[in-house]
Image (cartoon, rainbow, N blue to C red; front, side, top):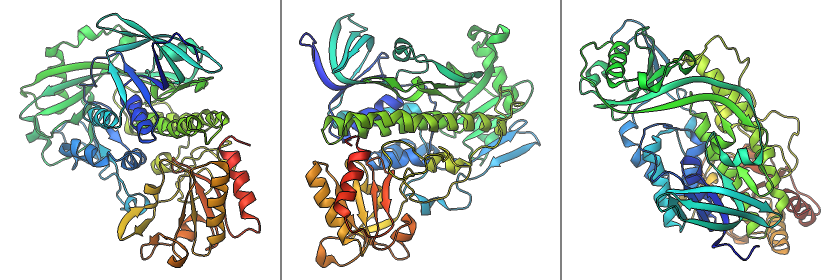
Length: 544
């Protein structure tokens, strides 16, 4: 490393919105010191990006913040479904869906659930949790420039208030700096996709009487199709605070200045059908829907995550969730390399795994906008067959060197979600008991690789202990059922069939990565379990 830097840190994060703060939280949980800098002076104040899907909530559960997030989201806890109507008072009313989980299948698939928590409520929770773990987070600080060499990245950062610049030396740089990412531009990484899709102005307002028109319809969003006031209505507190997304057409010469308070109030009255509604406009923020995916997820020691790597239509909240899951995928790999139990080759799997998922999910998000006839979007676009929502949320697959034995030709996101434990898939959720305490199998996956063995898999369990110790890999080995006389076991709850859910026999084994994805599995016993596990660990951790 250079000797003239003002500061040294293992990981430097550029961007402190949802993805950057999530990366900080995940790295903090893994014990990785880091510095996060955000050019704005505080967290987001505009309510947006509210949909947190079940996979994201699983990650926040493992990181210990799910209860705090649900508390921050309590005002919208009873809101479900998406409504389409000519107006709130009109005759044309159609529920696109009433419940997020209409079949009641989700509790059998996950210990978590969907959560409506707006970005302005979620970011402070992430910020507090990350700082409690020791994160160095600096608002009002901007990345001016950076250079990288074989050993690290040297960055120049500036405090915007004072104008004072400092040089920071890091082993790795993670750029979560938005769709116009200066880091991506400096790396010369292009993007592909359909480009701009539509533009909206998000208008926050207060209207005390609007709740009377809404009645008991607790929707997530209501698409209003009145030609005089087309837009989307979103509740903030179901009482007085609301958001209205008004289509904006800059290509036709329409400017933000055209959205005066009076015009916004009239649009809201026309769209809702409450012509004498008293409206107080409290804020306006433009946003742009686009479909673009970066042609690379980084160069050398610099990585892209979130909007710097992909832009997606907001319908379905796929973009923010995909970005948070980017950060989770990268965090454990950075920790493993920095802590010395994985080789640098492991980091190559980040792009190999996350970019195909982003391409598939971006197409799914655009198709969802067509399905919902999102105001301002060209609904004549046809995207072809798309995966079902649950497959996009829980069913995506990884194909990379960090997975051993998966199907290299399979789709990143299958059309239908089929739970399983194939290598490359998210490991299934099952309820277990440990010392009388109930926990999910997903609660086992965060800091280290995990080897799960069945009641007759003692040979695999012992081999895991030996292979991990020999390689210096912190491999956590857990036995599911069996004789407690041979060491502690995790007890499946009644009706839980661990071997069947994981596609192995009672003498089989499953190796799960710290991010909860299956790295490898053995359906039964093997005559030489220690060499087999040693080779697998070396391969998936970039040490072969």
